[in-house]
Image (cartoon, rainbow, N blue to C red; front, side):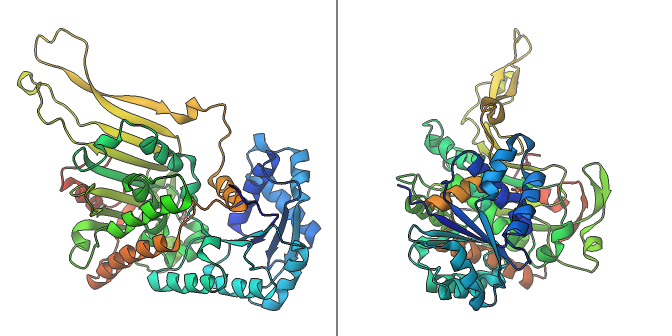
Length: 485
Ligand code: BG6
């Protein structure tokens, strides 16, 4: 059952995320008639605009970031009319009265979206409370990063939960808004085919790669204090691990799904001082060629020495009955050769090959799920090559290839934030992250970071446009596994 709010407050509304994702997503939903006619969207930031000035600003963002086939003047005018704006210094709670005035009566609830630096969360919460905007009908959405370790994330969560209850808090991991990420649940739990093999008896190992071609350029200030482990693994990649590894939830519903995910995070085998060397590899991009052009190395972009990692590969284990002995090789990096996020599940080989005496070579089956850029599901199969087999058996690995982009070519492709914004407005928390998930993620991540520190592990330089340091290849090859590039 949905419980739709009548007002939304968007903090950080002039920021980069708002321009690229949040305003375009709200526009897209509105253009498709998915937002109530009378929904008020109160925007705020420190920038000095009045409502008309902000509407002009928002219109420019839409013109720049909404796909041209989804833009039209009538829809734009209808959406912009929903926006109002007040300049607010988040650190001054007395200024929040301006927002309360713009919100008007809020009996039907407010969805508050904090797209600001986490250092401003506490101030925002104090101001919201003082202005009477933090009542039981309010929901609070928080953007990542939620802290930089367990202690700082606890600090933020404690401050939030002094004013809001956990049920009112919607922590965002935009990967959960991606269509193909949600499709993992359908693939696993909507088909009888995979479940009997989906365990240590049927699966040899899992690979998860989130590769990016971009460097850090404008974001290097934020990123240098974070690094890939905290920026990508703690959030997006661990969520993918959870969706691959979790037990079937009883229902597609917030508590049931998140109960199962948190069990996976808690079952992650700690990587500690003794195992960081054998189970993790870190890298930092040097100069090279990416996207066909020469690019500078991380240190040159930053302008000073840094030990921040832009690449991480980890051999992880989920210590429970289902996954005992099945490694999860996960990796992510900037300035890699391609932008591609994918999951490869490699099944066990057949127990005995009847073809070996006649020279036939079998490859184990693989399920490959490409999340982006092209949404694809592929299964590798061994087939017989046509022929009379006079000189032995000839088999070949071929792929059953399902392009979701083609199958659904007539369907609108939405950006992840459209789904998340609509769920927030309607009060469905299934695709948002619960506090205990974040805590369990940080416990595992902090252990790795402590191990790096204790062993003075520094990232190895890799050439931009390559798949990270060669030690990342060795991490998998030691186990006879090749990364699927
Ligand atoms: C963000 C990270 O959360 O996700 C970025 O902070 C990263 O560093 C981005 O580039 C990747 O998102 P997507 O949707 O482009 O895969």
